[in-house]
Length: 117
Image 1 (cartoon, one colour):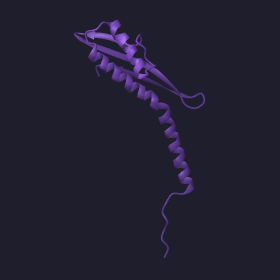
Image 2 (cartoon, helix red, strand yellow):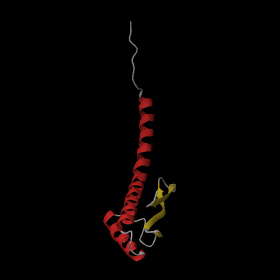
Image 3 (cartoon, helix red, strand yellow):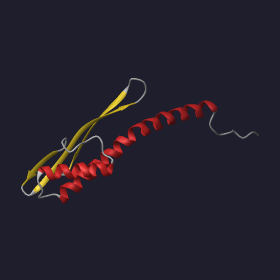
Image 4 (cartoon, helix red, strand yellow):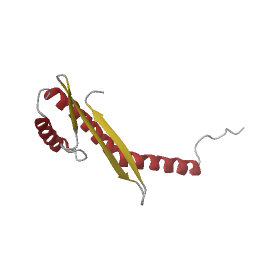
């Protein structure tokens, strides 16, 4: 009596590897954009807490300093929207990131980070 062999064929392995490679490529191309977004969101929240009574110019100057430290290049101090509601400061950063994928195709991602979300 022969026992039926179990396993994956070479064709199945190649198809699985191709799918894994495509997904890894998307992850490696899109990952830095999302890491930068999370750094922007963290900076927006921190500045809104620290500078609740500061002027708009001070907040923009603080943003530029923090962006230099955290390596944020997508949003400048002049790009952020600062509103004051009562005694609280709301900072909003909205931007679009273009990520080239293969050849002349790419992905546009619209990001929005606000201190009150």
